[in-house]
Image (cartoon, rainbow, N blue to C red; front, top):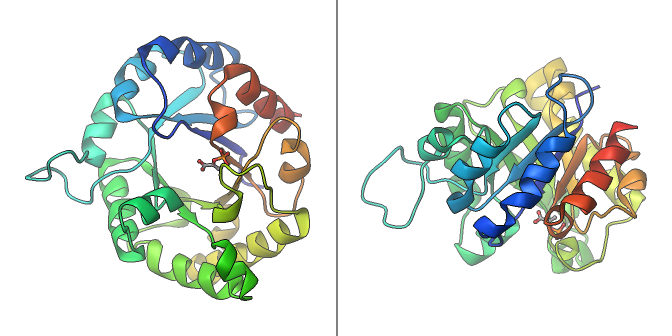
Length: 249
Ligand code: PEP
């Protein structure tokens, strides 16, 4: 069984005044290889201070996106190397908000994931269908094509994480039901074993979409769910830790 990963995504939220929430999470997560791995992906402005404040705890810090290039004339962008230098160990790539707001295609996402690997970060590669695609019966086709296009050639099973995030469930309070989650996670697992062989069984597949302390235990109990990517409920230490504690049971 892959080790459970409980990952938060703060999106464009958080000022230095909110570092206390991160410190609270850090204080509750022991530095140990046992139990779930815990991660907060933060706005770039908070990464360095957050990483410094959780030294000695088990809480890891990540970025929310990265550019595919190491450096250069890309005003406003941030490289995977910069994230690593600031103290990140993971980075989300291909989040549906990035795909929608910044027209990031599968090939852009694959290049970003490859950049993360180059810098020594673990990419969390997001896939997920829109409501229109689900209603059109295209879920499995869309997920298969995003998986094929978004995982870079240089990825290995041990170096990536996949997050299934139905777009219609993100930030909406509408959660995919356990049958829907099981179906897509099962498909993703099969695609991973097709690609990586036996090692594909070890890739963590996270569910993301309105996960909260009230539904986390049920979702984490679904076959092939190896953790969560949590937006809104990761902003408050108490909520995020409640999810972590359910994963730790
Ligand atoms: C996300 O940001 O990846 C996410 C799943 O958000 P929320 O938990 O708020 O739906």
